[in-house]
Length: 72
Image (cartoon, rainbow, N blue to C red; front, side, top):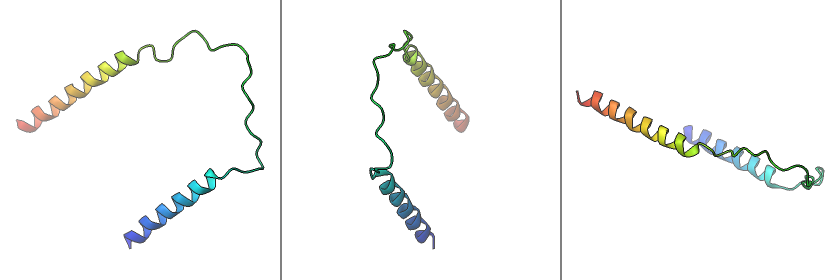
């Protein structure tokens, strides 16, 4: 019974994917970008390295805490 539900979910997903992949003539193509003002001077990835290091340290801290709690 569960296999039927899994098969139906996959089938519906593929049908939806195929419907979205087809190009329709009803919708116009997106407009071409104009040569307006440039992007602002602030970089998006300014602190991404610091954020990654903090997340890595936090992950090691939490993992160490779980292992220490499990062994004691």
